[in-house]
Length: 252
Image 1 (cartoon, one colour):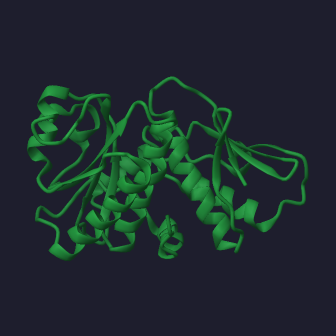
Image 2 (cartoon, rainbow, N blue to C red):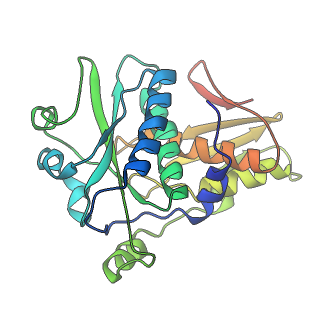
C-alpha cells in the first residue's frame, strides 16, 4: 500500500484526544477515512468499519470508553482470527487511519476494553471467526486540550527512552534511519500506555518484538510501533518493508 508522506509529519503532532466537539464529521472527511479503510480491507482481508454514531455501539463496550467525552464517530477494528498476525496487522493498519485523521486535523484515540459481542453485533458487521479487537475514536477537537485531558495525559506519560526501545545492537555507529525509526517508535501511541515492545539491530537487520504479554494488547502495540519505525526510516530516505518470517517481524 502506498504511504501518504504526510503521515511522517503527523507522527510529530499526533496526541491522544479524549474530549471531542459533539458534532458529526464533515462528509469530505468521512469520505477520506472510508476510502483508506476500503484500501486497507482490500489489501489485508481485515474488516475495518467506520461507525458514524458510536453512542449505541459503546453500550456494549466497557473499560476505556468512560474516559471519552463528546464522541460521535469511531472506527471499529475487526479482524479475522485466521489471518496470520492479525492483531499486529490491526495495530499497523489502524495507526495508518490515526495518522491520516491527524493530518486531516481530527482528534483520535485508541480505545481498548472488553465488549458484549451480541450488543456490538447490532451495530457492526462481525462475521464468523472475526473479532472486534479495539476501536479508534475520531472526531473534531478544540486546538488545546481540556484540563481533564491534560490530567489524563499527565497520568499516562511513561514514554520509553531510546535505549529502552533499542534493546540490542552490534554497533554504536547507528545509521540515521535506525535512529529516526526508533525515535518514531517512542512517539507511538500504546493501547495501555505500556509500550511493551523492543527492537534489535544486529547484522544490519532490524527485528521488532514484544517484551511482555500480560494484557492482550501487546500485539496491537507492536503493530502500531512497526508503522512508526517504517515512517521514521522513510523520513531518512531509507526504503524497506516489514516481513513476517517464521514468527519474527523483520524489517528488510
